Image (cartoon, rainbow, N blue to C red; front, top):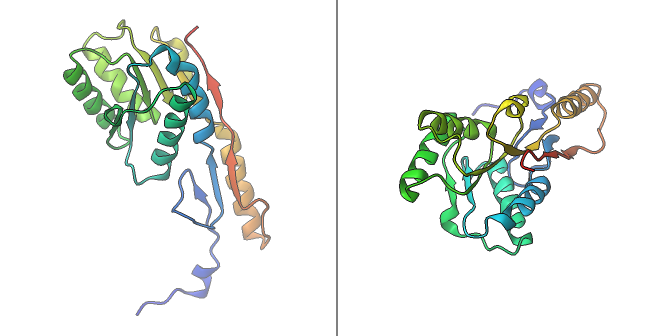
Length: 200
């Protein structure tokens, strides 16, 4: 039976962006729940009858956390999540494209309000909208993850913006301390995000 070498046992490991359930390993990630809830709570009162969620694989922690934030945001706005509003695929742009295409086909129109759980999914949504001349449609788009190019679009997109510099610094800090034989404090770091509101 294979054994783990002593050097492998001592290899520093830092988890980034996702975590196994109840893991005690060093971790760096953005707190997804709090800012997503705040974003949705601000938007949802305008869209009480319809607010869709496009997510990735439900088994992944970012998917679970962002859906939890979405659900909390609706609740804060006094709206109960309808199960049919949640559509999951994977985080590839092609999945965002396919889920959005299927949703438009089901509704016979673009949705009134949509939150995508990652920028890759939003990329697929925007590609579908561009190809089908829907960029001028009346849709409120929101997403987890921001991109500077969103400021250049005529279509306004409200987002949760992660602090990539701080994420990188904390990963470096943790791994450096572990290599030096120290015990970093805190060992698991959840960083805040900011909100970018482009709808006025």
